[in-house]
Length: 110
Image (cartoon, rainbow, N blue to C red):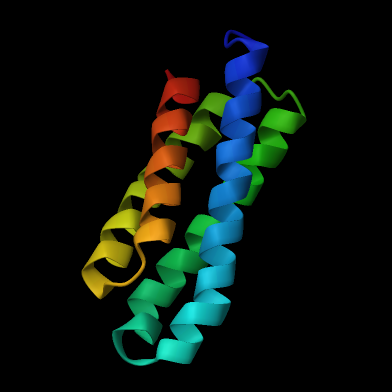
């Protein structure tokens, strides 16, 4: 792999943290808050973000040479999810996890 093992491990951890944050916030905070938190577009984005983060971590763990393509898609979804979380409000931790993951995935995709 072109990337250093350390940065791959950091990206895997960022992806897993983002997966956990999006999944738990969607199924916990958002469902409990209702309103904009459960708007279909926001919920779909959060669950999609969680799933692509989980997939990106798996692809990197598998040492797949295609990981840059998956990381590129992951970064795009994470940025969109962060914006959505900020618009809905009260989801700063999730938005921060998404932005951290996006930044790490952009590095892996380069």
